[in-house]
Length: 51
Image 1 (tube, one colour):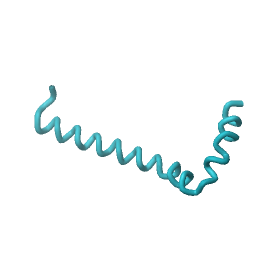
Image 2 (cartoon, rainbow, N blue to C red):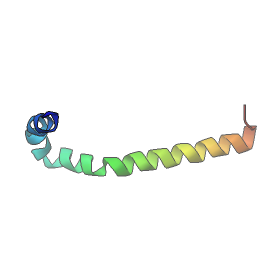
Image 3 (spheres, rainbow, N blue to C red):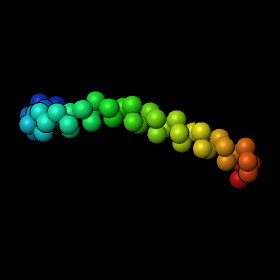
Image 4 (cartoon, rainbow, N blue to C red):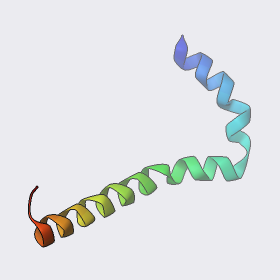
C-alpha cells in the first residue's frame, strides 16, 4: 500500500527530466562520497595515527 502511495505522490515529480536524471545519478554520487570519505580518513590515520 505504501509503495503505491509513494509512486502516486512522486509520479508527477519524477516526470521532470532534470529531477529524474538526478535520482538516476544519486547512487553514483553517494558511492563517490563514500570513497572520498574513506580516502581522507585513511590519509588522516596514516598522518596522525589512530586517536
